Length: 223
Image 1 (cartoon, rainbow, N blue to C red):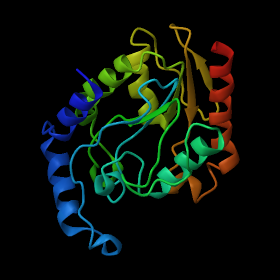
Image 2: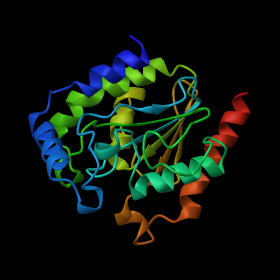
Image 3: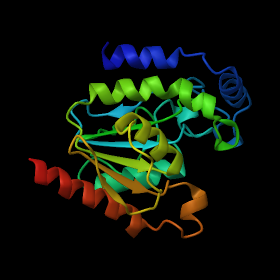
Image 4: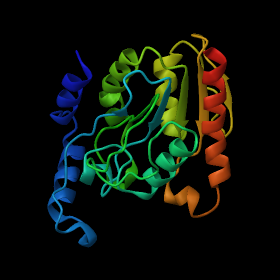
């Protein structure tokens, strides 16, 4: 299977009726600011460089972000934080993530999420996470050159851990932790750049940028 075939499979997924119904309703009702736009309204695949050495994994598409634009972490505040950090550390050609036609390209980086549909209240169920895991596993198997993973948030970390270290107990999640994996790769932990974290100051731009600077240093050490 190619990345293109996987993206097509993800876009046509209908495993989770609750999520599909929710995304369909959002795409129909829309937010007033985007009333004239056509929402994607389908499951969202990962985005980035197929030869990536850095992979970031978040929770799920935002209702009026990726569920609207069709590209992960695009069109919302979390994406603004993520792509700005990638640009500042040389993994992106621009700091903006507005829509699929904005010219954004990633260099040596790939962005994905554990659930491909926008969940009600940003809270997917354990069953929905489990049913979606195959897509993340497949992306990781395709991205054979990845040396560093960044888990954006505790739920993303737990899901990544089940894929990367299935035989080991899950460590406690804490922002700033660096974990050396069995495959001699690294897993970096970060708070998710959600408005709940960034507006309250729980996650600052300096804290977030440090995760990507560390990733860049680790990758340089390998090559």
